[in-house]
Image (cartoon, rainbow, N blue to C red):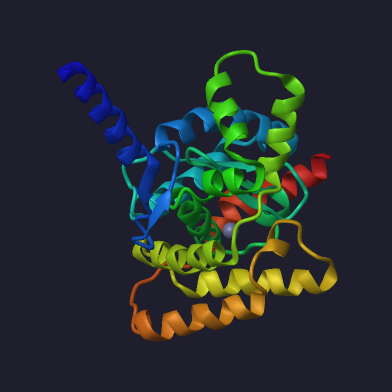
Length: 272
Ligand SMILES: [Zn+2]
């Protein structure tokens, strides 16, 4: 009897603990049927596939170290500084940045080429770190493709999975659409993170301006699912005015970005 009750209690406890998670950013309770450790399992398995799908890593250690350093600086002031994060630059020409479950953040060459300062890069990475912290990608995957697919991905991690199904899931991760609310939260909280990491909040607004200008030329893959850049600039400016109007000694990092990113990318171009 006792054992039975104990078992029931442990099943119930498991459900209570794993079934619901508090989003540390919104403070709201969200239905989450698996934990952050499952995100990591999916990330370990699918991050390499996403990398491959988007042209592979840019083969430059100095550039990769720099991207990771800026990302870690932003992640260290997030709501989950204890999680493990990986920031990687990929060769793809599209203008894109994305977060794979488990703390894997990617930014493409196409986007890196458009940026001009470290603060702008910190803005993009802050936005993606927020998606990681809020566990938006796992939530969006289960919303759009069902829980079964995620459970399958967790269960088959480490084992040779069905290749066609795995390839489909990889593309689904890349094309993931978040809700408008998640995106606005990623902009606002990403702004807070990059400011706390010591960067000028103007970097985030400049990033939106760059995207807006590109948008007029052709729709941008990743950002087409986001709020319109002009709306994003409006709510970001409002937040800056209220919270960050008298910041001092903030970092822009134009020279560092030129030396650690743009210089290498233009060299690559000549070699192509
Ligand atoms: Zn986003």
